[in-house]
Length: 163
Image (cartoon, rainbow, N blue to C red; front, top):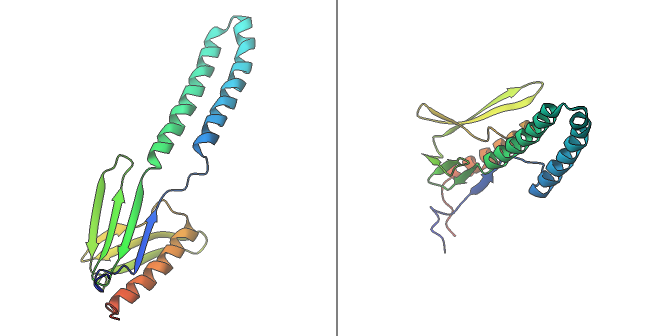
């Protein structure tokens, strides 16, 4: 049985949304390369071969841009709330991990809400230190996270539950 002080109240892992799957990515690149090749043939026939070369560079640039995007999608954030502490960790695309530990009784959750665009930022503040949570999330997702995290912090402030 878990120690009541270590029992998790709230745990979540936040990841950036990517709508294109790896299979879809390769399909997109294949279709793009075929289309670029079809458009390059008339230029080759007219003797304007440098144009075809630059069209190939476009395909390469698109491939590299998507590969960088997929690499950046490996970044994530975790939030773990127990009665004794809130642990927030940011893990970058390269695997570099930064971790913050807060006392849930004293941490403050600040929300910046724009009346037209919704929630713009969600920040954990403790002893003058501020850390933004879920910067890559959309306004609706940030609002849902703020609601869930506020409930978890309120539960943590009540202390551990002994059964």
